Image (cartoon, rainbow, N blue to C red; front, side, top):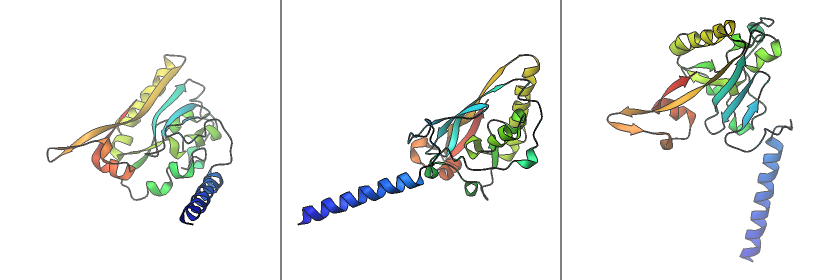
Length: 197
């Protein structure tokens, strides 16, 4: 009798989980939508290697040219939004940044992709955003973005790869590493988030 109850419970449990996953999975059917922890997302002007555990991009690859830099769109008509291509439990939300003390830092800069309003809006998807200290976002990171754009006057195409580096932080002679935590919120407390471009 116990075995029969257990079988019914397991069957119901698995059926319920299957239905929940099916109903919560985005309806847009693209080959990039998988349950992989590190999907690669293709946008109009760039690619994203996304970390669904940390809910941030691990890297972005953008190709710049004078065409990208033609200003035909206005930033004031764009807003930060969740990326609906990513499974809901794996994507970041606006609440993740609310009162965090960090800027929503673009890895693919909005200013470098303003040749259409649609493309500009894609740069405001949270899959392209990392938490950045304000002094970095408005300082050195801004200068690196400008340098990348300036290179298009010298070269026909400029490929730029950007992303965060998680560097261990030592406190009281104790070294914290990535295995100590899985939550982004805790990672931000234990890691110096350093970026590359």
